[in-house]
Amino acid sequence: MDLNFEEIFDGMLSVFGNNLKEGGEEALTYGQKVLAERKAGLENISKVFAKKFADLLKQYESELEDEKTTLESQLLAGEVIVKSTAQKAINEAMDFLVGAIKKLI
Image 1 (cartoon, rainbow, N blue to C red):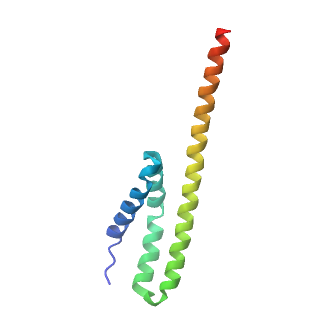
Image 2: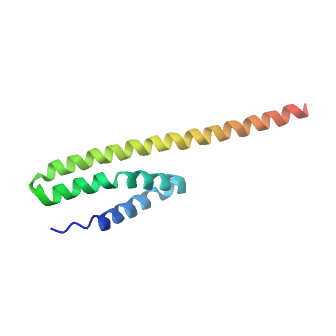
Image 3: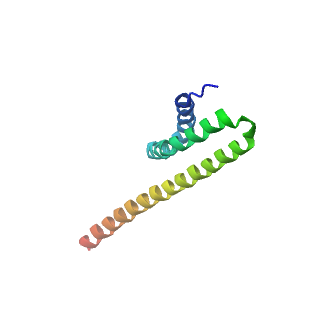
């Protein structure tokens, strides 16, 4: 069996990107970065199981589920970072507004 992981990974990025477009460019970029960081691990798992352990499909799916959980956790962390940045920007903008009003009083 010939495993073309680059083609598979490109497909993963495409599906992933299509599902993150609604989150905006920052979410898409962060998501692609996280997925790219896990590429080697995903490729290694896929190659090992595709070549030597075809009869262990359930274990393969379990390993992929673990990778999915890892990716979801990292994406949630990214979401917190984005929200924190947005909250800081809002707070600073409001502080600026309050400061400007205080100068007028």
